[in-house]
Amino acid sequence: MDMGTFRGLITLVLLIAFLGLVWWAYSKRRKPDFDEAANLPFADDDEQPSRGKPTSPQDKADSRHDRGDKNT
Image (cartoon, rainbow, N blue to C red):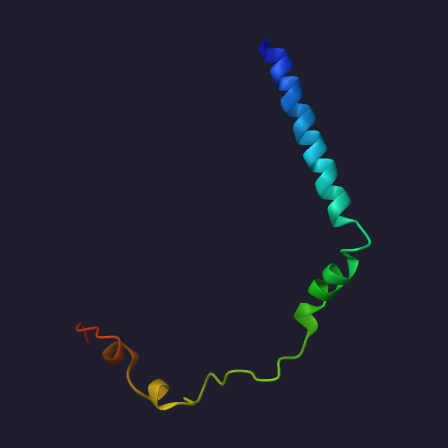
């Protein structure tokens, strides 16, 4: 097998893999999953973390001290 035949086979394998990926991505069976994923940025979060106020005793404490950082 010479180098040209090997390159041709690799090109054929990659073309088949690409066509398989395109077929998978555009199949009707995957459409509901992709539609759901497309709408995720617009979904409302039920609980959003508050950034200004600590909500637990662990958040109130100095984080460097709690982690054992001695360079404070």
